Length: 589
Ligand SMILES: Nc1ncnc2c1ncn2[C@@H]1O[C@H](COP(=O)(O)OP(=O)(O)OP(=O)(O)O)[C@@H](O)[C@H]1O
Image (cartoon, rainbow, N blue to C red):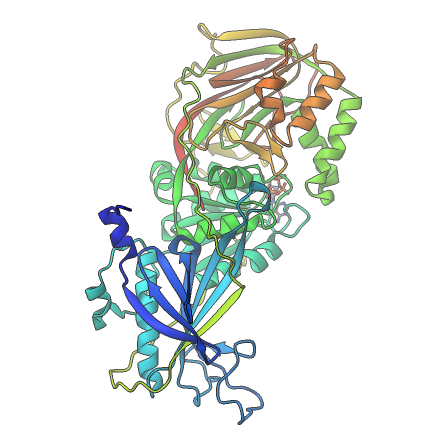
């Protein structure tokens, strides 16, 4: 006998229920139930009952609409067919008065496929047509009841069937969220704006989440914007672009004296539109969310679901600046590839592959000292949430309608759909910091403007102090590259064991002794994470990946090279980094 817990029973309790028909064919009956679990579509064809569930977590929004006036009305067709149905908002001047139906559009993104390789989300629209009553107002009232209950469930409210049947449940929905979108139109292959408008804005509109969109105009625009705006008017900041735009947003936050309130209450979302996209790929990986074929979908879903998780940040100190990093610090091969391939920006992500081959042929090594503090914790990761997929295949649209002719005369209720704001900034005025001199925490950006950084107090000795008992390697390196995320880029699974908030920096050390074939093997392994597997452990000890909590690099200054933080070029010289577990917050699907 199957024993159900009381929570399961509550999850399955019917809150609303109605019978619908498919395209007015009365034989195809659907009973639609709304529970805490989601929308249950129960098809009852003779003795064959089939139930499909659209899970609540896959539903991102719903809207009440009316049918649109058709250009040439065909009198022989009393009901609009689903494929010819056009709908408008209920206050539109273009609505069709002759159709008394109220339509509830439910937007869902359903996980299809079970294997990692073929898992993807399909957009599905469920149209419920309410037409049981002889007046639009009554049909609309029913549709609004479903909409309000669904919206409350999506917000995580627990409801009872007696509550949902009260008229007071039908309220004008007030969205309390509002997002700031900072979009780099020049990121990647220059498609940042297009990506936002075509892939993300439609999802935000379906979820009726208002947003303010600003296009970044130049280097450090996003950083200065975040530093000088009242960011508390938004419930989240979304960066559209590459890792560079996220780096600016995060560092803009740490230029504010109230950084601690901002990091706690304004999570950051990441819409991949750049050539790197390491953080976006890492977040999708963390949430076990399919990244391909639609890399922007996990970010759009994260934005509308309003769920965020803490993320580790790393405080990085060079001789002239302090920055906060979410992705990586690099010295040697990978940083050379990152910076030198900038000239191939138009190739998008392919630029890294092309330049890797070039750099391998002309291999360089760098002399210096590396100190590090190993992480004491072993690999005890919390398991990431697994999205339960729907086992059913849904068509991309399901159109259902109620029976006609059930009269009722209740009061009229008017729903009001909100539309998102869209505007771009005409010009910006920035307040530069008034502190003079370069004390501790003051940075100089490329425009020679002093930048005062705030943030948590460092636990390490300053960069110029002698280090106590840290491990030290003194020698020649092909590279030292640190990452705190799984992915450095879309195709680069650098630290497969990393978690968003495991409190560890994954330090990859490649010593000068590594051969070209070892390096080629290593670079090829980066795509799948094979380089980090125990079978591929390098017996010569020339290539090592170790978890640490802090490190310092002191390059020999006789020869220069590149150093990067989150893919951004920083001055060549001593650099040290320490992790601050769970300091930031990111939107997670
Ligand atoms: N309108 C603009 N014109 C020129 N540069 C800009 C503009 N807006 C932002 N930038 C700068 O472009 C740089 C790169 O941005 P971003 O990271 O978004 O794209 P990307 O370089 O293609 O991606 P990735 O960093 O992942 O390689 C950032 O340093 C940012 O300051």
